[in-house]
Length: 268
Image (cartoon, rainbow, N blue to C red):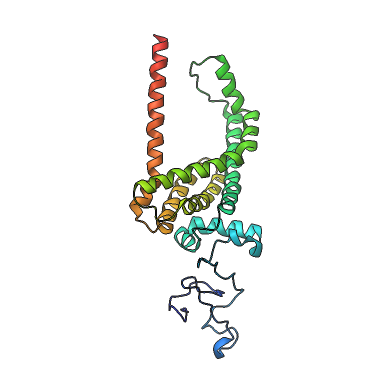
C-alpha cells in the first residue's frame, strides 16, 4: 500500500495530489525516478489542493471543478456511505451558504417525492382526515390542504421551510451540545454538519418507508458528524441530536393533554 512520504500514513485513494492527513504534496508517478504508471504511486487526475484551513473539503464545495451533478452525487454518496470520512475532510468553517444550498436542493427532492406519493395515496384510498370536532370550517380547510392546493403550497414554500428547518435544527443541536459540554467549535461547524446530513433526504425517493428511513439515516449522519467535527464523545453527540427531539415530544404531549382537557370540558 502506498504511504505518504512525509507522515507515513496510508493513501487509500488513487490520484491524490496532496496527503489528506498532513497536506504534503505527493510526487507524480514520473517523479523520483519511477516510470510512468508505476504501481508505487497512485495515478489519475489530481484533485484540488487542500484549503488554507488544512481540510481537503467536500465535493459540493468544489463543484466548479468537478461539475454540479458530480459534486451533488459524490457528496450525497459520501455522507450516506462514509460519513465519518466525509466529516473528517469537511472544513468546520468556510461559510454556511454552500452547505445550505446543498441541504435545500437535496431536501427539496425528497419533499417533492413525499408530496407526490401522498397525493397518489390519497387519490387511491381517499382522504383520511380525522374528525376532531372543531367545526366544518376546520374540516374543509384540512381537506383543502390535502388536495391539489395543499400540494402546490408544499412545492412553493418547500425551499423556505427546508432552509428554516436547517437553521432551527442546527441551533437546537448546538445548544444541546453546549449544555452537554461537547461543543468545541462554534455554531457554524454544527450548521455545516446538519446541512450535509440532509443528504439522507434523498432516501425519500423510496416509496412508503423512504421518509422514515431518511429521518433515521440523517440522525445517524448528524451524530457521527458532530462527534468528528467537535471532537467529542459519541454519547454527547447522541444527546445533542436526541435531546431536542425528546423535549419536542414532551411539549407536544403536554399540548395535546391540555387540548384534550379543554375539549372534554367543552363537551361536558
